[in-house]
Length: 152
Image 1 (cartoon, helix red, strand yellow):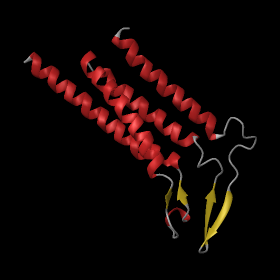
Image 2 (cartoon, helix red, strand yellow; image 1 turned 90 degrees about the horizontal axis):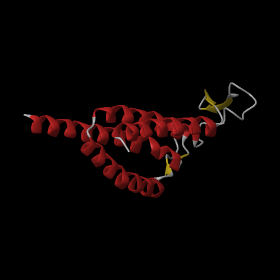
Image 3 (cartoon, rainbow, N blue to C red; image 1 turned 180 degrees about the vertical axis):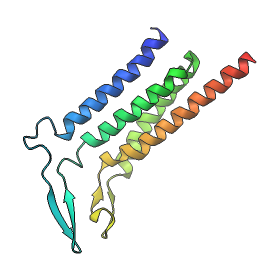
Image 4 (tube, rainbow, N blue to C red; image 1 turned 60 degrees about the vertical axis):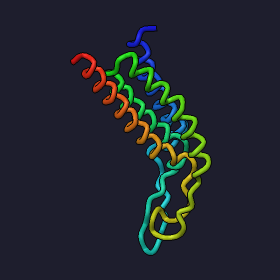
């Protein structure tokens, strides 16, 4: 398979993850759009709690966006750099899944920060996803540096 097709598959995967996030967010099967606001009062301050905010949809939407950023970064890679990124991804993703299941849910305790409660395992997508984009950027920059070094 040509390298361009492999890079295109990353774009297709990003789109599929994003669309599945839109589906799991609950918009497509929620009869009341926009979401109804359930008022929560905490120390004389009114907060709006929209349903479906803590579902699997929002992390998948975020991951789809991050994968699209990764796909754009991968446009400037050579075959060797792309292969290195695939190896990194094959190691990083299972480790992140295990860490996410071990670390989360995190209890926030009581207080104004998020109104107390817990952060579920779906919230692990945000920090680990951003780290994945940053690591991809480093891999791409390293590949570009080595390509220019070899040409010089």
